[in-house]
Amino acid sequence: MNKQYDVIIIGTGQAGVPLARDLVAAGKTVAVIERKRFGGTCPNVGCVPSKTLHASAKAIYDARNAVEFGITIQGTIKADLEAIVARKNTIIAPITKRENKFKALKNIDYYNQHARFSGTRSISVNSTILTAKFFFINVGARPRIPSYAHKVDFLTSTSILDLEMVPEHLIIIGAGAIGLEFGQMFARFGSKVTIVEMSSRILPREHEDVGSAVKQVLEAEGIIFRVNAECIDCNTNTNKIEVHLHCSKAEKDQLTGTHILFATGRQPNTDDLGLEKAGIKSNDNGYIDVNDFLETNVNNIWALGDCNGKGGFTHTAYHDYQIAKEQLLGNGKQKASDRISCWSLFIDPPLAQVGLSKKEALAHAEKADFLIAQMPMKHVARAIEKGDTRGFMEIIVHKQTKKILGATLFGIGADEVIHAVLQNMYCKGTFEDLRDAVHIHPTVAEYLPTLMEKSKPLK
Image 1: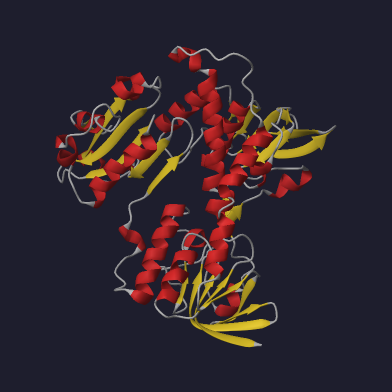
Image 2: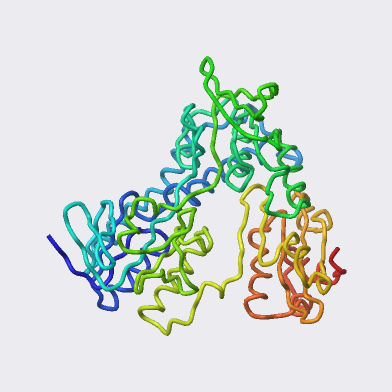
């Protein structure tokens, strides 16, 4: 059986769902295929559930440190992980209502099955062949699991969300964003946590000052770091997990824990889509090659979200939707290179970064023309009042143009304050605009003008 549509969308992540709504509102007939959970990673097994657990971990931390604020709490403060997970499930439950509402839209046929390309203008869904003029691939990504993981019973960033008992000793492989966020969470829940990293330091993509500051905060909460792990292997021994950190047989360095989480990156869900039958090109890591308008090498086929390697965040996926919408319904002017890179590490306190990092600035050909403004959070009154002076703020400026090139904020409220800098950059403002703005007191953001007065040559 064959069915014809104007548009076929594969995947229901942050780009696919709003795009489908807009297309049917414009009178297009649309087929949407989703083989797993409606909504993709973010609301089901990503941002929403993990940040819900983070909120519980923050509440435990605040309760344990309440005495510093003159508050006495009697009794044992303990994480009830079963109740924490139940709260998480309640928060993500409304996704089912959104799914049902979406399926009820006119001119949408929804297939909860696996799609594979059978040609440049057709896909197969079980025994049905669907054809269309336009295709949008929005299949997301999944945890990347190393080859040796099969030797043990392991956790991923997905499965750890449903644990209902606090691990006695959680070993985490990978000191990137996922590893650090879950490491702090479970340390606060009561686990002994050891984080293993093959690089010489955590957050290896950032300047060493950033990694050192984050490491100091997490070590203060009892997290143990093992860096320079030459090569990693693991096995099960008497119901315990052994993790070996070095290649040499003479080297006996190993860890023993009760649980292991692999936070070793993510890989796109493109390996079983039949891309080759449509002639769609992808790179060695499976990311689909796209141009600045997110179109693949095959006309009228686009790749959106995590599978195109252009961002890997919910906010970049949503911008992908805006770009795609303009391709079919607008003037087609928005493009991926318009956006300014921005991300946040949601530990406590958060780390937020926009534009050029200090590490990138120091490697830049024009670094002699750069200025940097820095301030420790211990000088910020709002941080002092809230009892959290950990971290720092820094902003990089181009001396001649006076444009802000990037910023790294680590400290209380950093994930929100960073947007003042981001908006300045999008509006093509100068550091003087930020310096001369009058901000509300008392806030963390009010120190951005003060920070801009402290610019000095980048070294």
